[in-house]
Length: 95
Figure: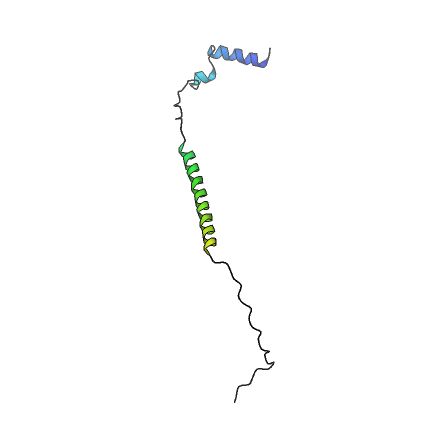
């Protein structure tokens, strides 16, 4: 005979057909309230945080684009006139 059959017969003799879980009280069926068909609070917080982050990033980008368009274009400065040759020795102060 197989080990499984032996175990099953032993269980039948002990509990007269009842399983070990039912003897311990663990086989009792409990009813569970069904979840409401809606969005959970956690999902709502995640979505709202994402919308806020995207809105802030979009507002920052829009402001920087407006600011860049409002600034005048950079115009290069006119070239400086050539400088006179400097003397190799500085002039001495009168004593």
